[in-house]
Every structure is written in structure tokens, then in C-alpha cells.
Amino acid sequence: MSVFKRFVGPRIPEGLSTTDRRRFVIPIALFVVAAGLLIVSIFLPYWEMTLLAPQYPKGLHLTAYANRLTGDIFEIDGLNHYIGMRPLDEAAQFEKSVSVIGIVALVMLLLAAVYVHTKWVVLLVLPAILMPLVFLVDLQWWLWKFGTDLDPAAPLSSAIKPFVPSVLGRGVIAQFETVATPGIGLWLAILASILIIVGLYYHRKAYKPLADMAA
Image (tube, rainbow, N blue to C red; front, side, top):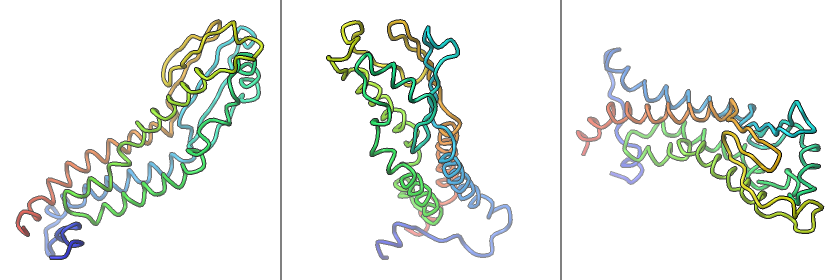
């Protein structure tokens, strides 16, 4: 048996009843739905933050999509300038440039996983499962980088110590407060991860008996 056939595994037998065929359809459907959710997530916010400041009673808002930042960037950069923080658009430039292509690649791997009926399917779907966590970890790293690498020559550099805003929840920075929440795009990516994990359960349940018989 070739390496490729060992990787993709046995095919679904012909002539199955509707009930028997359904157990093979379930993991396929879950992977495809998860792929669709990831595609939709590209167009929706992944992360949102509100900066509460005395001079801005309604707060300043920042929204992060997979590939861009929107919101009150000019005003937030103005405040950050006084404490020595770099402009927000300088953060995660590489990540923003490859994010859409990266998500599309995850979708292609999920669709390819539909045709793999062995345990190696995990290799194809694992990147999509981990993507929401990787996004949050990377974002937290940039928050740490920007909050701890302050310009000592800034006008108010001596008035504030290096800080690390929280990627989720509330944080306090001197007289300012930040409130960070997941965006609907990230929730869709998390839901996609859950569907993939459930799909792996049904994938094993459906295809392992076939793989054992073919071994």
C-alpha cells in the first residue's frame, strides 16, 4: 500500500443504508461548517477594547479584525504618545499581512481533512483548533511589548511605569481603565474549534473500524 493511501485511509463502502451512511456524513458536515465559520470570521471583529479616560467620558474604542485595526486610533495614539508608547498600527504588521491568507489556508486544510479517513486527520485540523488561542497569545504578546517598551524621552515617561494591558477583561493603567472583550469573529473561530473537536470524535467512531479492517 502506498504512503498516500496509508495517509488518506479506506474509502466509504458502497451500498450502505441511510443510517449507516449518516455516521460518515457527520464528521464531514462538522468540518465543512467549521470551515465556513472561519471564512465568515475574516469579515468580523476578533477583539474589541474600550479605553476609559477622564477626558473621554464615553470612552475610546478599538476594534481588531484579522487583518486591520479600526476605531479611535488617532485619539488613542495621541494619549499613548505622551507616555512613550508606539503607534498602534506598528503592532503585528506581519500577522496582519498574512492573516487572511492564513485563515484561507486553514479552511483548505479542513476541506482536505474531509478526504482523510485515518488518525492523520488530526494533522490537518489541529492548526484550526489552535488558531483562536494563538490569536490571543500573539495579541497579549504585543500588548506586553508595547506596554513595557516605552520611550523614556516621552513627556510623561516618568509619570507611568511599564504596564501590561490584559488581552481580556479589565485593566488599570494609572488613571485609565481598559475593558477588552472577544469580538464575534473570534467567537466564530472558537465555535469552529469546538465543532472540529466534536468532528474528530465522530470521525474516529466512523472510520476507525474501517481502518482496523484494512490493516
